[in-house]
Image 1 (tube, rainbow, N blue to C red):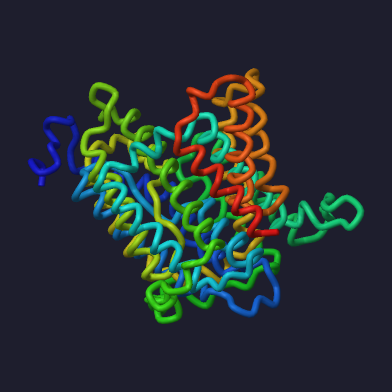
Image 2 (cartoon, helix red, strand yellow):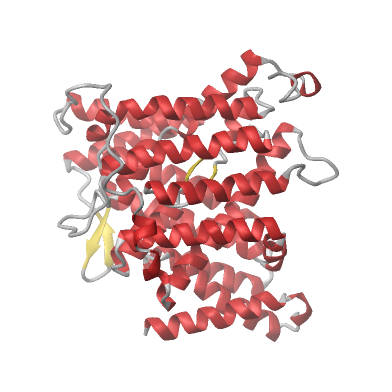
Length: 438
C-alpha cells in the first residue's frame, strides 16, 4: 500500500493520511443532510412529486463513497467527491420547481451529462471547451451560484420573505424558527472564523441540538438505524432517459456540464497546488482525476442524486497533511459508515441547513475578486450573470444572459480575436433558449 501510493516519495505515512481523510470527511459531512433537504425541496409545501429524502441520503453517501474511492485508487489524489452544492440547487429549484420538470427526468439529464463528460474527458475535448470559456465568465458563474445559494438559505431561515410591493422584504426576526436559524448562522460563522475544521457540519449539529432543547425540533428516537431504501430513486434516470430530448432539457444538460466542468477544474487545481502536486504548472494524471469525477456523476444519477463533483473542502485534509489517494480511501469509508446515521435526517430542518447554505454562498462569492471590473465589456456580462441568478431564481438563466452579452460587448469593444468560436455557438444556443422560454 505504501508503495502503491508513493508514501516515501511524498513524505507521508498511514497516520497522517488517516487524520487527513477524517478531516476532509468532517469538513464536507454537511452534504449528507443538506443534499436530501435541497433535492426533496423540504421547504416547499404541497409539492406533488417530491424526491424521497431517505433515498437521497443513501444515494448521497454512496455516490460520495464511490466517487471518492475511484479518485483515490485511480488518480491517487487526496480529493473527495460528493453531490455538488449549486448543482443540487439548480436541479431542485430551477429544473424541478420552476420549470416543473419531473425529478426523474432531471436525473436522466444528470446521467446524460455524466456520459457526455466521460466522452469529452477521454477524447480531450473537455480541455478545449474549458479553454474557450473566458476565465472572467467562469468566475462570474461561480459567484452567481454563491449568491443564489445564499438567497435560498436566507429564505429558508425566514430572514428574507416575499413582499407584494417590493418582491422581497425582511422577515419577522422574532419568529422562533427564524431565531433558531440566526443562532445557527452566528454559531457557524464563529466556528469558521476560529478556524475549526468542519465548522459548517458542527454548526448544523449545534443548531439542531438547540432546536431540540427549546422544543422547535422533535428529538430523534434513535441515532443509528437501518440504511434507507434506494428503491424510490434507483434506476429512475434510465427509466426516463427518453424524456431528455427536448430544447428545455438540452439547456439543463448544458448547465450541468458547464458548472461541473469548471467546478471540477478549479477544485483539482486548488487542491493540487496546496498539496504541492503540480508539475510544470500541469496536473499529473489529470485525465484520471476528471474521469473519476464523471464516473461518479453517472453512478450518482443512477442511485438518485444530482451531479457528483470534486469538493474544495478537500483542502482541509491536505492542510492536515494528506498527499495521496489513501486520504480519499479513508474519507470514502467514513461516507459508507455514515449510511447508518439516517435517523438524524429528521432533525435537520430548513432552519438547521440555512446557515450552511449561506456560508457556502459566501465561499463561492469570493471569486468576485478575480473579475476585472474596470473593463466594462467584461464587467457587464459578468455582473448580469451574477445578479440574474438570484433575481430570476435560475442558475441557467444567469448563465444564458451573461453568455449572450459577452460576445456582444467584446465585439463592440473591438476584441473579436479574443472570442473563441465556441462562444459564438453558446451565444446561439442561449438565444434559442430565451426564444423557447417565451
